[in-house]
Length: 235
Image 1 (cartoon, rainbow, N blue to C red):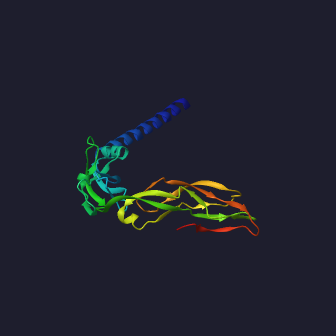
Image 2 (image 1 turned 60 degrees about the horizontal axis):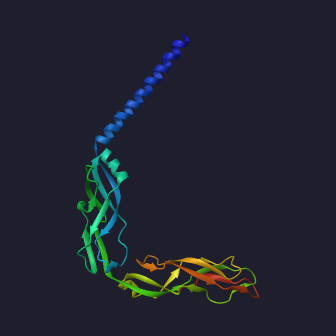
Image 3 (image 1 turned 90 degrees about the vertical axis):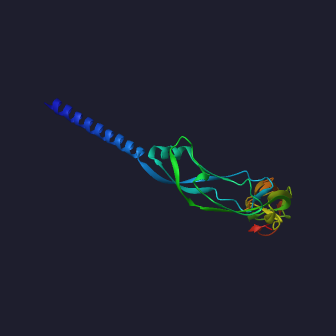
């Protein structure tokens, strides 16, 4: 009798699990076959920009769009991705305004997905300038506290002292130097040489090289520890 009850209980559990599994299969099938809308951020790519032109400031990295299609195709799109491609082949120096539309969004052709709306930005506003190159000096930025009895015997030495910056003409016209990222001199006890990245901030520049070597001349000195304020050494 106990075996029969146990067997019946096991069968009921099995039927419930099968029922749950079947319900899940039906739900997934219905979900993936129904038309749906999703909002996605797709990377923005600029095509065919003339080599003698460049952006005064970087364009947005992505475009927000609403796409429509069956759930299964939208799921595939999540993994395979879409792209926004803007062709600037005929652009010249100055202001460029492009209204973005669904035709600018590249979706894998085997997916039955359409672009319902371009959300942000709807209009791409860009500033183009002639691309120029200019040599500018490097200014080390440093901070920290040297130990007691230590001091810098002079300004740090940078190698190379100048680097080549390439970018928009109007940006380079106002640029005479570039800072390094802040260097912490705390803990230095002798002549120390470190590599430091250059910091172009939000400027859309190509720096060559982008890393310099900075040498700090630390020596023994009387008195208390030398305190270097953050940002000392900047232009």
